[in-house]
Image (cartoon, rainbow, N blue to C red; front, side, top):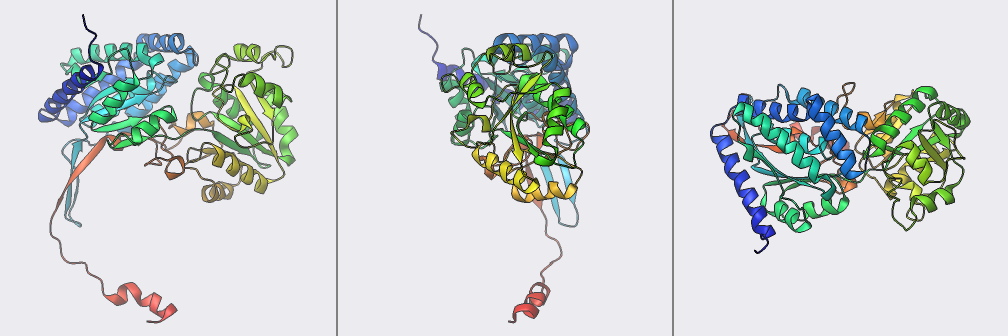
Length: 467
């Protein structure tokens, strides 16, 4: 018996999704879209299923830890549902008499969502909810290690759909086993690609010929200045750096501390579970033993990470992460890049000006466009970073991982996918959210003329430069 043609198999999945989406729109309503999104959200948030998905994710990917996966699945989904609760995505969503424009919500069609192994349930759930809210069908392309989590999640979603009579073909996935060939075909044949994860996937998404929203690389750098509350900064960095064993692209990778408070901050770090290890060469050799990140260190619990780095006798009991002093930046200094582990690069800056220069250099090396953090009591310094650093987000006095992708204590949209703008090679500089799953048709009516005179436009210029 011949093996199925992978392209034909994928095309059949997309065809099913496309037919379901046509029916979804033809018989659509805001109530239906909202209920489908609620069903998908409850599929991952129901406590028993959430725990099952969290355990399965850690078991099959070897990344992160179960309690934090449970928290992430719950809070990211709850926050997203809060964000979209009263958003209109069906029919007339804007009617402006002054401009004469009426705006009608329209779905994209079939979304192709490429999702990473770091969040094999939370990221696809986020994309699925946004797609359904906006009238789309979606086909998820998980990473090879994320297939089991994705299959289980879709099973839960289809079970919820059965309760409300919704069409299961609205939410499908690339048939296992996954392959680059199938993923490529999905990206080429869907109507919109949403890609999160490796930069290889991002490049493929942005060059596949289909409109794509993709994300840039993370390499978060955080400044601690002389006006910061050091104990609070140290605790927030600990909570953020260790969450889900640093699987998030928003996890701190470098902390730049001004000289005036360096020693005091190192002491605060120690009280918050951070151990300074003065062995850059040794850590680099063990973290990148063959030029690639050591899988025994990536996204592992603290005890496993410490053992893999040979630090059992070098750090105190209770150490939750390590900070390695360095001043190197660039390709020859791997600590200055993303480490996907409970390992932090620690830089000592002469003053705030120097801290800005160091941060800028790190971001130009890796992670431009994503986000940087600032622990300071001077708001003008955040404005300075926003003018000088190539980044889309400045996270001020917050635990970076929790703040960047949306928080109940800030105004960012809940998301697991952060656009990085032109700095990061992306079309968007926002958190990817419901707006990126929707398009509109505009009805344009004639209104009274609003043509200005030349004097209205150029009077001030003529006064300054003459005619």
